[in-house]
Length: 199
Image 1 (cartoon, rainbow, N blue to C red):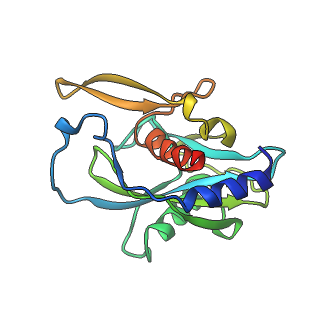
Image 2: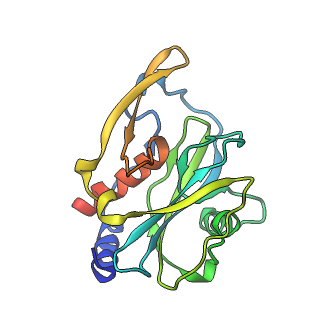
Image 3: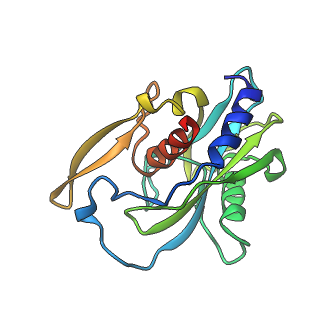
C-alpha cells in the first residue's frame, strides 16, 4: 500500500460511524459493569517514510505492572499535565520510542476502548512523514518494530482465540505478524480500524 493510498484509506475509515469497544466484547458475561476508568491515549502511528505504509508497535517491558511483555501501541495513562488523550498519546510516544510529536500529522481518533485492567483508551491515528530513529525507554519498552498497514487492515488476518482468565474462558482477537503475537486490546483497536477501512 503506497503512502498516498494509505492516507486516503485512513481518512475514509475515520469518517465511518462506530461505537466504543471493550476487552469484554467477546465475553459480555465477564464485564464488570460500571466502574471508574483511568484515561489513556495510544498512537496508531502510520509510518509513511518508506516504500510501504507501516504501523509502529512496541513490545512492552516484562517488568511493567500493566500488560508486561505484550505487544502494544505507543501510549499510556493521561497525566494531569496532558490537555487530553491525544496529548498523552503523543507525549508517551516520544518518551517510549523517541518519536517527536512534531513528526506526527494527526488524522483523528477511533472510538474509545475499555481494557480489562480498567483503562478507557483513546486511539489517536496519525501519519509520520519524516524519518526518525527509535530511542527506546528501556524501563518501558523492550523493542519497537513496524508492521505493514496492509496486513493490519485485512480483516481476514484476524482470528479469535481464548484462554482461562480468573477461572473462566476469555476470548480475544489476535492478528499475528512474524514472531509477534498481537492480541487483546491492541488487536481489538487495530481490528476496529480494519473494519472501518473496509466500509
